[in-house]
Amino acid sequence: MHVMAYGPAEFVEQEIPSADAIGPFLGQWPVIWVNVDGLGDADAVRKIGEIFGLHPLALEDVINVHQRPKVEPYEKYFFIVMQMLLTGEVLDTEQLSLFLGANFVITFQERPGGDCFALVRERIRKNHGRIRAAGPDYLAYSLLDAVVDNYFPVLERYGERLETVEQEVVTQPRSETLARIHDIKRDLLLLRRAVWPMREALNSLLRDDTPFIVRETRTYLRDCYDHSVRIIDILETDRETSFGLLETYLSSVSNRMNEVIKVLTIITTIFMPLTFIAGIYGMNFAHMPELNWPWGYPLVMGLMAVIAAGMLLYFRRKRWLG
Image 1 (cartoon, helix red, strand yellow):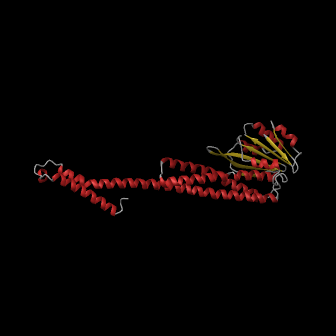
Image 2: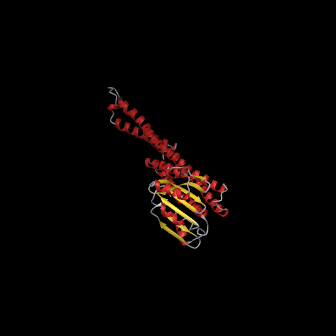
Image 3: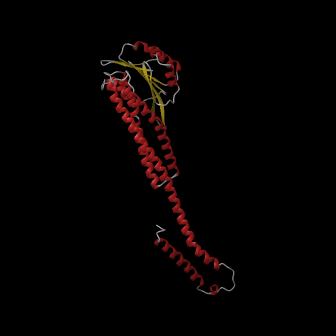
């Protein structure tokens, strides 16, 4: 558990061992931000709920993760759920539960081990911008904006991966290419499930009239909402590209197979008359005039060569070769 309490002139930052240590901060600072990394201690979550008067149903949604992004208004606070990206070797999301009250912001992160709030903490420490002069609603906006903006570099990387796969699909499609396309499609579907309800949640913050968000902060939230719309546009474009790559891959593989079959068919067609001639001279007839003729063998071989060359020339003029 980590606490940052601040006002326009000063701030304090402290790691606290238990929820009981939150008490001295209450009523002493204009804004208190309590961040909890990990949900392994249900008693600590329940104790924080008792200190700030959080509803048991909201705390139940905090502990039971994989909630859909949403905004739930309560009498003394807002409860906001978002999906925060984890950008490790495997793309994944974790639930961020945020409570916005009159003078506090509480964030519960599903797992310990890092988040996307480093810039927000630095702005509070160094008093950059208007964050220290504003209320908890601006802090909540800053945290939500960090969550939303964290999607952009991830989508940029997937755009680069799609360009690489596109070149491979056109030049040399392989079974590994198909596997990469399916991996990208799966990750983009995961992002889509997180982003679409997130946009609706941000829209409800703008639409609903609440005393916890002042008019000036709504302007910033509108920009955050616009970012979510841009993310959806990029995401849908990438998903359409991935579907197109799958169709291109299947077409490319089919064309390569057709080319192979065409070559094999041409080879078979060339050898059909040669096999016919060889079959005639392979029959055991006693009276065949060419059998005792000294030039019979060269003549037959020459005839076969002329037939094969003539058929190759005919296929090339028909543009069936090359």
